[in-house]
Image 1: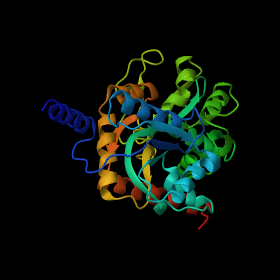
Image 2 (image 1 turned 45 degrees about the horizontal axis):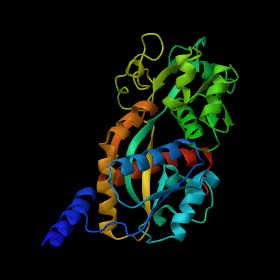
Image 3 (image 1 turned 45 degrees about the vertical axis):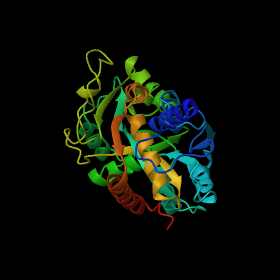
Amino acid sequence: MTNIKTGLLAATAVLLAAPAFAEWAPERPLEFIVASGAGGGTDNFARTIQAAITRGDVIEQPIVVLNKGGGSGAEAFLYAKQNAENPHKLIFGTNNVYLLPHVAKLAYEAKDLQPVAALALDEFLIWVKADSPYQTAMDMIEAAKAAPGTIVFGGSQSKDTDETLVALIEQTTGAEFKYVPFNGGGEVGVQLAGGHVAANVNNPNENLGQWQAGAIRPLCVFAPQRMAESAPIQGEMGWHDIPTCKEQGLDIESYQMPRTVWLPAGTPPEVLAYYEAALQKVSESQEWQDYLTKTSQSAAFLTGDALASFIAKSEGDTVKVFEAEGWSAK
């Protein structure tokens, strides 16, 4: 009888540790495949989730993180295709999963991956040097119209999220900027602080240090509403004090990049349900709340139809920009 009771207690403990209503659970160690190099934003995203899962006993199996950032993340997505139907491999990316095939001929398609969840949204802001003459986004846009191609925007890589946003600003307003690509948001922040470019559209965390130091300042954020309340960052100004770009007269309501988790295509519905439940637990953890605060990302948890709708709109809107710029590879 004692052995039976012990077995029942052990089984109950396993059920409580696993995501609720799961009909499936991992049978061997998991691989977290990261579509970026070590230390990048996507890598930090994946490792934060790994830590929350481990500390919260959300999934019993061990987790190994593998970085496959070649080709702006295409290496990771091709790996997913090569491991179709494998339920023990989760892929971590952004909107690059579904946008890369539109600007380059690649050996995978977005349909080779199954979206599981988006857990956060990266915001994009227009930043200028602290002593810049531009006080609003429209100040800079009018200056660019008066002297086309003379105001330099720095950004991370070519035909990626930063250049796409600058192109969208041009297409929306008729202004013409000069775009100069660099190797990452950190380098772009340094270039702006040093006065080598006039502006950038970095995420909050990429320019946080320069703003705290008083070297740069934000003009506006491309979001439907202002960012969450925060402690002051520079002087008395915090994230919530930054106006939206729409408030300043720039007719772009939203430009946000999702932090996304995917499975290889062909995995059964019960596998998808298991990981959706596990990631929801992560999104409710203190580790995740601390991550959002540290990175100044906006909280979002999207699965199922809500996630599919977000992806469809994001892809459709962005492809229009690609086509207008002549970047489309299709």
